[in-house]
Length: 125
Image (tube, rainbow, N blue to C red; front, side):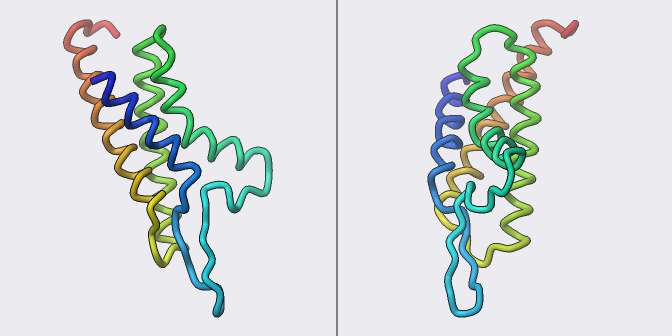
C-alpha cells in the first residue's frame, strides 16, 4: 500500500505542471495552470503545499501515524480546493485536473486503508 501512496503522490506532484482548466474570457480562451493565479507568497505556499505535501509525507519514514493523518487532511483539502475551483470558474477541465483528482483519490484511499491497519494493530494511537 505504501508503493501505491508513493506513485499517487508522485502523480499529484507532477500535475502541478499540467493545465487544470480552461475558460472563455470574451473571445479569448484562457488556460489555467495551478500557479497561474498566484498573487502572494501565501497563495503560492498553499498551492504548492496541496500539490507537493503528499509526496513529502510519503518520503518521511519516521512519524508514520502523524504523516498518515496529515496526508489524509491534505488530500481532503486538496480535493475540495481543486473541485471548488473547477466548478466555480472552469468551463472545460483539462488533463491536470483529471491527473490530480485521480491521484489524490488513490492517495486518500490508500492512506485510509493504512490508517485502518494502524488502528487495528495499535488502538492506543
